[in-house]
Length: 77
Image 1 (cartoon, rainbow, N blue to C red):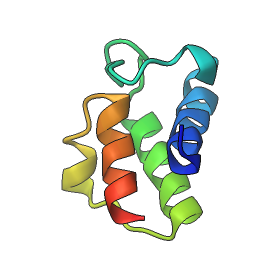
Image 2 (image 1 turned 30 degrees about the horizontal axis):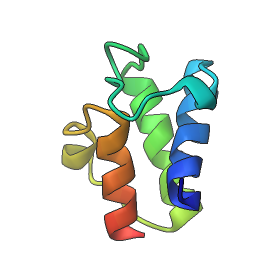
Image 3 (image 1 turned 60 degrees about the vertical axis):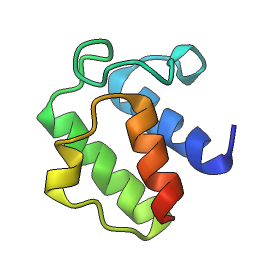
């Protein structure tokens, strides 16, 4: 697991209360991890600050799985 991927899992774990070690890459952010729109915005803000990037709102709405977020971060940061 890369350091970027680890940070994504840590961030999602903190927001959802799910242990990052049990979060699966194909877990659906809303259905499996029960993240609502506020959680997604908080995730984006945390990752933007951590990696000094910008996650456009339209891109945020496209994230379905944990892997979608990881791929985006790894491609940008």
